[in-house]
View (spheres, rainbow, N blue to C red):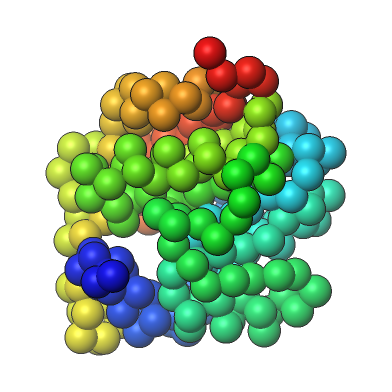
Length: 216
C-alpha cells in the first residue's frame, strides 16, 4: 500500500530537524505551568487505567513527564530520528515508530492516549480516521488528551534551521474538533483555551475527551 504524501513529508521534516528541535525546545514544558497542569489532570485520570500512548511524542518530553507523574506510558512517533533521540534520552521508557492513522495495538487496550500537538500535521479530511483509530484502541472509559494551536489558516514553515524541508502546521478550532470527536464516539469532558505565551503566535487549545463506558 502506498504511503500518503503528507505522512512522508512529516517524517522527512522531523527527521531533518530532530536534533535542532530537541535542543531548542528542551525546556518547553518547564516554562508553561498551565500546560503542565493539563497534563497533570490527564495523568490523574489515567494513572490506574492501564497503558497510555503518547502519540506524536517527538523527543519524548511529554512521555517522560507523564511517566514522572506515575503513568504507565509509552511514546510513538512517525519520525525514526525523533524516536532515536527519545530512546537515548529516556532509556527506561518504550518508544516506537508508527502512525496515529494505523496504531499497531489491539482494540480496547489503552487506558489513555495523549496527542500533544501532533494532530496539527493531519489534513482535516484525515482527522475522522485518526479519531476513529483513537476510539478503537481506547478501553471503554479511557481518556484522550489533545493539544493544538487555534486558528483557521495553516502556518507554513520552510527551511527551518537551514534544512531543505517544509511543512504545514494546521491550526484548528476547538468547537470543530469537539464535533469530530463526538462523531467518532469520543465525548469532550473539558476544554481550555489559553492566550499565546512567549514565542507563540496563536491561542493554544487543550481538549479532554472520553470513550463512553458502553457505546450506544
